[in-house]
Length: 96
Image (cartoon, rainbow, N blue to C red):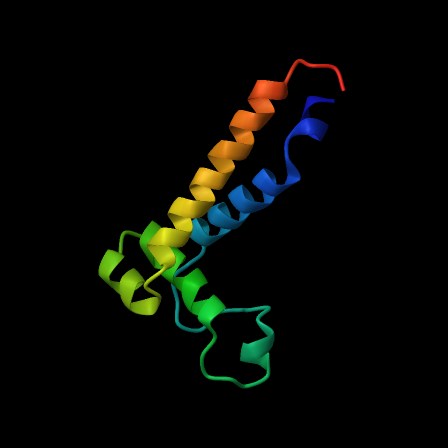
């Protein structure tokens, strides 16, 4: 019952960060990116994901080179997860 109240958005963002943190940093990788599959050589979204992955592996300069907003994205997503969790804890216990 309690798990049903945890914000789905928080679970999704946390899951995405965990997947990016645990992924192997490699040049060639499986991707669901439609631009990559269409043959485009650059996708800003893929660069952002790789940047976050490199950041979690401690390669800060490589992360910044891959996409300058990677660090910002981790900060924003982390703050969003914290905010959603705080909202959940504030309302937990109230009957809906």
